[in-house]
Length: 406
Image 1 (cartoon, one colour):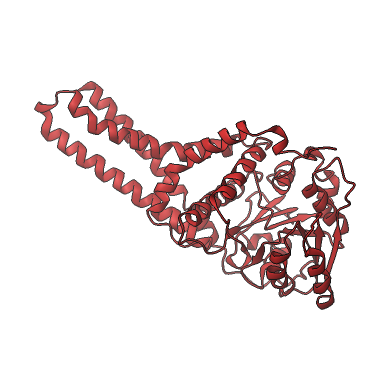
Image 2 (cartoon, one colour):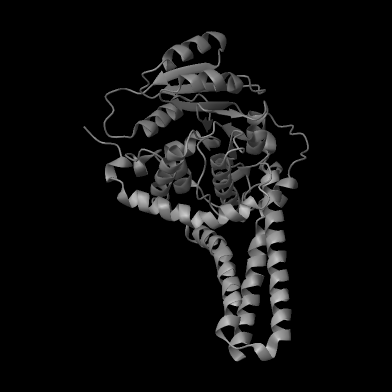
C-alpha cells in the first residue's frame, strides 16, 4: 500500500502542475480581451513603408495587392521586390503602378552570389523604403480589415493600447503581428496547419507579454524600424540561409524592452492555405532548420516541452492505474480502489474541461474557430510532428537549407 500512496501523491502533484499549465493556455486570450476597446489616439500616425518580396507569384499579387493598397491610412507606400520571377509578376506590377501612385517595384540583380535571394530582396526593400517604419508581408497575404495599418500606427505611437511586452516603456522598435491561414478548416490538413500556427503564435505572444524578447516572428505581419535594421547590419548573421529571414532577424535583435505585440483582431493577416501535406511537411523541415539558429530560447523551449509532455504523462499514469489491479492483489481494498478510480477520473475530466476551454478561449480571441476536443488530439500529435521534422532535417542535404554558390 505504501507504493500505492506514493503513486497517488505523484498523480496529484502532476495533476496540479497540469492544471496550472492548462490555465495558462488562456493567458493570451485574457490579455487580448482587455485590449480590444481603445481610447482614440490623438498623436499623428507615422508614415509606413510596406515591403513585399515576390518570386513567380503573379496570381497572388493580382488577388491580394489591391487589398493592401486600399488600406485606410493617410500616408504609406508599397514596395514590391521582384526576386527573379519568370512569370507575369513584372507585368502585373507595372499595371498596378498605373492605378496606384503609392506602389513602387524593384528587382534583385541576377548577378547576386553571396546572399540568399530572399534576404537580398528584403534588404533591397529596406534600403528602398522612404519611411522609418517598414511593414513586412507576403504576396499570398491580405489584411482581414482596412484598418491593419492603422493598428500598426497606433501601436507605434501608443503601445499601451496594444497587448504588449510589460517591460516596454517608450515606442517599440519591433511589432509582432498575428497571421492565420484562410478558411480550410473543413479539411484535416486545414485543421492541422491552423492548430500548429496558432500554437506557435500564442506561445511567442505569451513569451513576449511576460517580459521576454521575441523568439520568433511571422514574416507575413511584422513591423520593423529601419534604423534598427541598419544598425544590426540586416541579415549579416545568416546571409546564406534560404528561409527564416524575418524570424531570425527578430530573434537576433529583439530585447525585453523594444518589442510589442499587436493582437487586435482588425490587425490580423490572412494567408492562402497550404495546398497539400507535402508542402506543409517541407515547410516544417525548413522551420526546424531555422529553429536551430535561434538564440535566447531556453525558457521558451522549457515551456514548450512541458506543455507537450504533460498530456502524455497524464495518459501514461492513467494507463498505469488501469494496469495496477491486474498486477497487484488489491481485492481487500476494493472500496478504496473504486473511490480512487472515480476521483482520478473526475480530476482528469476537470483537467480536460479547463484545458479545452482555455485553449479555445485564446483561439476565439485570436479569430480562430473553436477546435473543441480536436485540440487535445492535435496536441498529442505535436511531439510526433516534431520528431518527423527532426528526422527530415537530419536526412536532408545541407545545401537544401543554404544558397548554393556558383
